Amino acid sequence: MFLLYINSGIKCGGVLSAPHGNVSSPNFPGLYPYDIDCVWLIVVTEGSSVLLTFHHFDLEFHDSCEFDYIKIYNGVSEDQGNLLGKFCGANFPPPFTSSWNVMTIIFHSDNHVASHGFSAVFQKGFKAYYFSAQQQSNLGLWRKTFH
Ligand SMILES: [Ca+2]
Image (cartoon, rainbow, N blue to C red; front, top):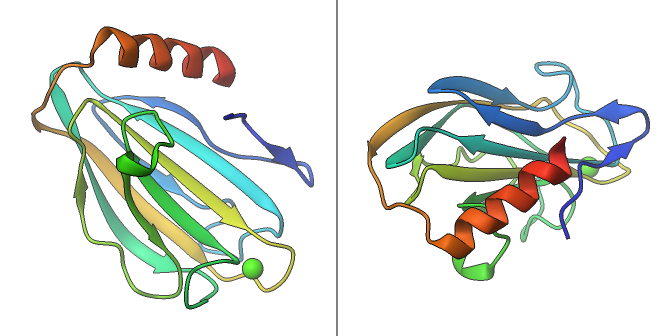
């Protein structure tokens, strides 16, 4: 289940409903806090895709990104099939385009070793698919979770 996590007094994540904007780790460009989970839901106009481009990326490195990581999802679901990528270290994620008007970003840090984090911009992109009724319903549930 998805919740807006609040650990160590740090509030992060949320719903970003705008044609463009940016997303960055808490304290960026300073060191991000330990033990946090942030979830951002980016929502643009229906029928458009979301383009996400990273400008800074620096997370604790691990071979399989077990410690600190960012995960990017197509749509609202955490389904394996919707995972566009999981990243850590200093390798910039490539630009991503969603299939629908929604993209989800998860940022996790563990309780040891922090780095400077990330900064990315999103913008409304090209024509995309419309959500199915089920996806609309999931989006509604998620929005409730965030507010
Ligand atoms: Ca860490």
